[in-house]
Image 1: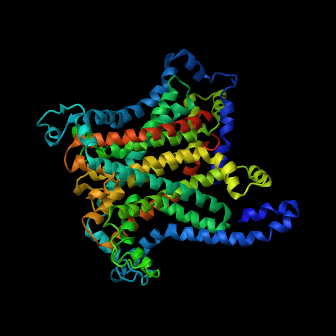
Image 2: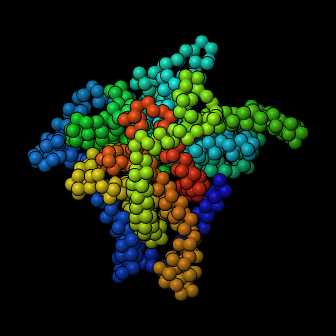
Image 3: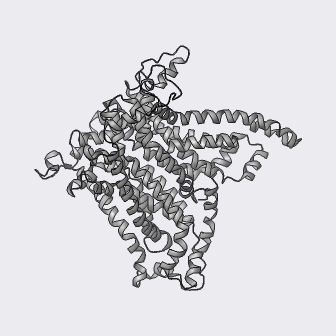
Length: 334
Length: 293
């Protein structure tokens, strides 16, 4: 990760460059901050931002507002085709959803699925990153190739491959497990039960997510000063102590960032479940995302689907807040 | 365990005590590393292995671990099951247009938030970050209704529009990371020498930014290429994109595993190769300054 080193080492100079006022005119930004939009130059940043804002307002801002309003309306097929106007129904959709025991089992399922995936991803990612520091160069290269290959694999491709590997009759996984003494997995159907099926899907998600964590943490580990680790070791810290008190605190911002990103990604898992179950996930496979999708596009109750989606977003909001704090801290450096 | 052995010697004779331990402990780590390699690479290997086997051996109760004799039968079958090049062409058009628009619009916005200090800058940064965090799956219903209103259902332009929702914030944020790493002094020097602000950007900053811009664009291209949910929802079956084409192997063509693996190879390998080119650059860009924070 030599590239990472060079870019990060360039950060401090940029920070120092802004406060001192080098002689000459190129300091319009300063004036603008106090004077507000003065003349054409004050409008420049806003002009530069305008196209981006226009597009985002149309394709993201408007739908976001629509998501909220939709969840308080009665919106089904007739409203979609314009035969009937949408009517306001207040909190009816929410009371119906929150009073539905199926919804709560979906929430619970999403929690253990996403929680398990995030935990596994972070722990395995960290362990592999630490392992990569200790192996010989050629092993490191091999592992890196494997990491990049699985990172780059399109999700749809990963799903088809895992579906094939876990096939009940011809899958390589059942064949391998049956080779173990006393285990007979011949013809075992992994997707007969929701828990087992979702565990396979979790494995698939983790397989795709570990590389991002490992590669980012590997880059981060190169930033940990060797002297600090050595000092801790001389002071009598064991390998775990060094990690706990020296390495981890330095990596913490990265860990927080990646954990929150993983939470968002893993709660947002959709194609994996949808494709694994051939486009029709059974009730015991439903996660919040597929449940919302099904309500909207199978049952054609767009309003209830929106309400579920909105609840999902709100659940994630707390996590996002943590992430934002971290990113802003990083942002302040520059 | 290696740490334990390192812990005691330093008091007496560090060099002699530590050295002999190294190769032994390293061999243990190497074995573990190879294990990780095998587990991580296996799905990819298994895909290639199945794809290149003759059809009659590909699906076998006792799996064969080597694709021998090699055959392209499965690829022929995959191409014949349903049109492949049409979906690929549509995916290329959609991903390409999304990235070009995203790179241009995103670059302007990234410049604004990284090179100008203006009131509300922080708010803009926060909103771009927040927007990036909204899970796309949650937006699928209102976006569908919006495209329906704009008569963009089953149109590639509609898909491009929706893809901008995730490509654009990503591009802005990543490009900003690259731009803040280019020293301001370079630009200022050019301006002292008589360049206009635009001139300084085009002659000094842009050449330095170009590799980052290319990497970001390729990364965005891959994201758009891989997108599944919106492609499934917006496009009809006659106008499906490449991911939906592959996905239909799991829905419509049930258990044709061998051609499915051939199709997966055709979809996945180009992406992996593209990714290899940009991965280093992106890892650097994404984490720039993160550790120092």
